[in-house]
Length: 552
Image (cartoon, rainbow, N blue to C red; front, side, top):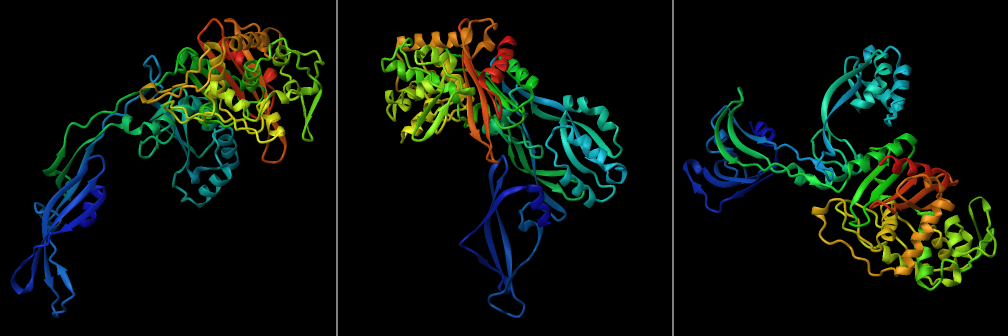
């Protein structure tokens, strides 16, 4: 009976408080009053008074007592053959919404795939088909589970969205021993890495916005504690009731589904790891945050990456703010050496001693900036980055990495920072905001869930009008005559800056991340494109940015 109450009440905790006054009865027995307090999931605390009859030991031992057992000890209204049951009525989970009110997540058809061991006639064929799903299935571990399972015990494998199942359905159904069960689950329709997912077992938010706003989306349940017949399960009496459970309330984001879908399509067509972020310069609203794989890490907002030469927007701003003009000569040698380390340009190009700041920027010449190291102090970039909001703590309404530009503690560290390497790190969101700041002239901290934002960060520095005008001209010329030529035929007067950031892989090899940031002069939109592990900004990220912008 006690086990039944424990199972049916699902109490988060149970506490007993024994009264100080007890009553002595016949034969040395004592009646001990107590208060029981259940902490009930979704209903809070429920307390009631009861009592227990303590009997002395038959042999007279003073330290041995027994409780005369009866159902009423658990609750005074319980009769034999009855139990306590917690009943709850869960409210419908609220939706996560795009800016226009359309749902970013909702009920979706899914297919649960499992293996029937006794009917698996060709395991190798099955594991080959499952591998081809690209769902990250560890088929070696799966084979071990199948081998250890009972012959007629279903072994769960993976749950697929309807679109993914349909894409591979013919191959899957062609393997004897694979089973398929259609069902429904709440899934993200767009911005999947950011929106997040639910725990398939308990239904609570497990990641992304679904987790961050789980309480708001879930609401509060209505419920009751009832006395029920243990055999039939029928309720006999209601002891405690909490009515009027509140439904969850939606979480509205700034996502523009047209922009989001264009970003997702551009990444999906490429089929490699990367991110695209779009920001509205006039408001800071995040219009799109797309990642590939779609259900993977939200690097669009949280990635901590070297921005490479896209950071030259900040470096050029520092020069312009210090009095260097776009037509001032910097030079662009093939190599620049600092503290014994040789820096070079991509493919080791050089432009010659007469290269101006404008030309160095549009061609993305690393050595032009590094060879003019003496124009910068160790904290120059850190201070300039403040005008772009980089390095502060942003209140976006979601988990974000807001950039880092540490003070350079050596000439070599400063040289690396000038070209967006070394200790400089940013997320695609940060770099989209850099472009947005140039477009609007003012840093407007990005926001994704405006209702949750309490205090947006305001930049502690600002750029001069001449600096902004020069940056805009150079970013436009980078498209028309420089390294961002992939955007040349894109409508809307695109401005851009490319970047190719080097990093060391786990096996000690050198690889690159490809970047393109920019904004449209004829539309209130700034963007950042980042492709992981291989390629260059102009050659690889540029065409993806063009596909994205052409898809708007």
